[in-house]
Length: 75
Image (cartoon, rainbow, N blue to C red; front, side):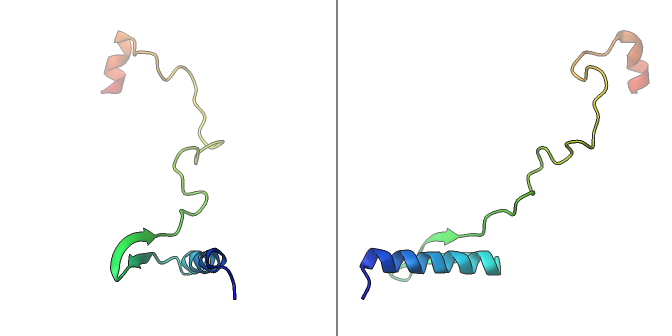
């Protein structure tokens, strides 16, 4: 017979593996009432920041205000 903490840890790890494998969230209940939801973590590489690194090239000062003669070109 294993210690109670060890058994809970083993079950928790098994459930986390299942959520990761099936990609389906799992509702955790206490006495039949929902108390938490275990959801799969985002897959690596889904972050929008940095996704165009090395693809886009910025030329010039993109923060400088436009000169008055450039206003017509913007319209």
